Length: 338
Length: 274
Image (cartoon, rainbow over all chains, first blue to last red; front, side, top):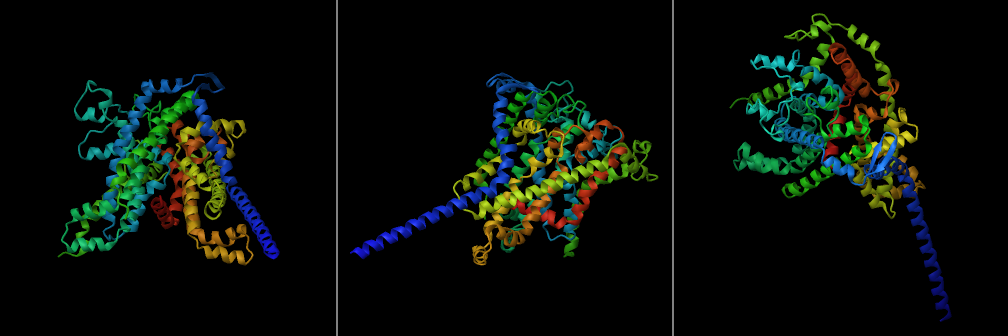
């Protein structure tokens, strides 16, 4: 009986010391874990987390170059919503997305499908299409500005081969739809005029620059589709279109989703092109290329209306978030994960 | 039945036409950079310069401190890459191989930060850099970019896939966890490290918005910002502009041709991991 009690006490002792050892190990593990995280956490705290919190505060003030002037509550947000230039910039970004994203998506998928036909010289083609991707946006903007020159530009020269009149690309504020329906007197309401010719120039360049990236992503996606599916379909006598519609398109949908999301974000963040190619003043002609990112930059770092800029930034964030959620929501059901 | 490669002729034709469209701007850049200003403005234009003006390239270096810009960019690219690899490897190791309360939440926080667009944190970051006295210094372009969250994500995925036995064996051999990271984990992670390096080098070499805002003086500017200002100041001097642009893109194009396979595979791989 006594022995049993002693044994039990001993056992408790051992258990307790084991527990404390476990505790100690856990504590050590926790400390070590955070120690490893520390460098990354410190940088992120200083240049992401704290700034994001500060940004909320700044957006609630009339904040100039010298600091906070006056607490305005939601005043900046309300002012942004009442600012016609903000809405115009949103419309401009919207046009940019509406044209560049789908064109780029279908064109890159089309080329990727062509490249996936056991074609000779695949490597060479891929390299060529990929060149603009590794080139800086600043460099390509400078080159394209020259190509789009109204009187001396290469593009207008090439158009002249087919007898087309050249356009004053980056200087032309007329909307695309306006031009198509032949509206000379600006009768169409602004929102229906479509992207200006200047904006179309940026869109064309954006497509050229981003195409290769999407092609490479699609090509990888296509190569991951098991060949047996295609063989089975061919034995069943399915035509090229039906194979694409019923095998390739559904099986590539996760890739399509990724490409779509990336293209939307890249399109939304259009900035350098506007800074370099348009104007002066940049964002022109008639503010038709003033995209949201540029409007943010102009308010924050040219006019030093920091509170106002911060409010624009939060609307931009909401829009990106909204687009992401919407895409997930709408497309999730259509994505086929193999 | 025609030979299969013949049937593919229309495909090749299409791909070549599109390919010409992709390369033409580069060709036009180089050809303009070798013309005299007068010839560059001729319309209809000439495809090749009547006499190649290599002096344009000499003149560019006389007009703007291109070497300086390039040196700045190399320094910033290299320093931030070192930071990214160091912070990334350590953080990913903690996320993948340590068990501690708050680990998952911290990881989610990192991922959430990736979603926040730059305008949201740019202005306050500027103020913090200003308070630190870092505006218009290299530090302002390096330190905030020494963490790459996507890189941490990729490394964590990779570290988690490493077999547990490896770590058990290391432990038995008396190898500490810190030593295991450098002796066992890193040698097995080369492809992922290359992927991150590729992304980061291309990203910092080409970055524009951030350095545009945190620099004011010419001597500190990286290549892209210097080039962009040059394009505003000399907006009609096309031959010099094209020469400067050609010089600016050569390093990355060379890198691309050397490490092409790595670059394309990396980008494709990262895309799929999402």
